[in-house]
Length: 288
Image 1 (cartoon, rainbow, N blue to C red):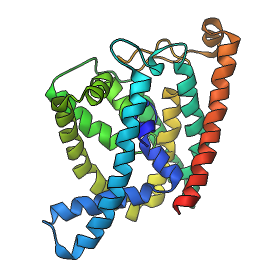
Image 2 (image 1 turned 135 degrees about the vertical axis):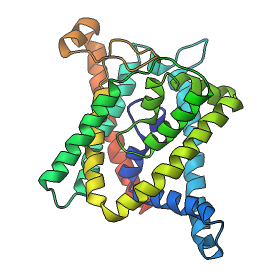
Image 3 (image 1 turned 180 degrees about the vertical axis):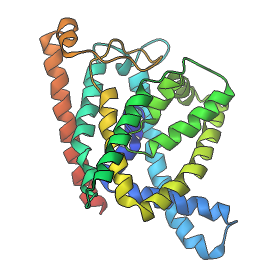
Image 4 (image 1 turned 90 degrees about the vertical axis):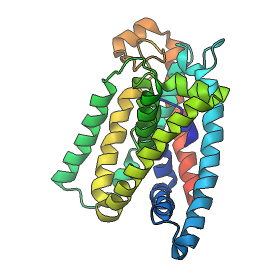
């Protein structure tokens, strides 16, 4: 999940859904937050401990992998990472394009009663992602923007199809936050996490309620969100700078700007993403 959250266009929530732990993640977060909201009730102590153990283990893995992967993908001031180079970025995007494309069926399989309204919910989710992808807020700074970015990004990380990294990219905060994690700039991390806590305390109770009462409607929307995210993960782009979401190249432009070996390699990475999906599905059985 940490690896996925490091890539604009991919959500850690997608990985949680593939692994079959998405509902458990939302319910555990809800139990954890309720314990504090209700002022530490003794009757909820055991549930709190179980939720804490699950979230601590998951969170540790996410933080470590996010740190390592962003170091490789974003790089440093002296050397650009793999995601910022036109020679390597298409391979990374293609890998996750294949992963997300092959996993779109996961939430849709959970929709047993496929009514017209649920197809419309799916289309709505798809449209929302496309609209958001075309937004750009510039390359801003300041503590207030970090708080807003934290609230939106950490909320997005819990939604399959909505990328927290993409949110930061459109806010111009992607490299700011990634570099702050690498260089341990605690002031930036503090404001970002404050925003994240605001997002968690508002979004998690809502999502928990929706999953308990409108699960198939939620899964319909999530299917659309994941389909929409494929546009962001299209491997061939006009540029790969971290200052915003770059327009995708058309097929004819791809052949004009990339050689056949590079194109073939990019396609192979897409199939590798499908293989990664199969590996994650095998892990789901072990989790169960």
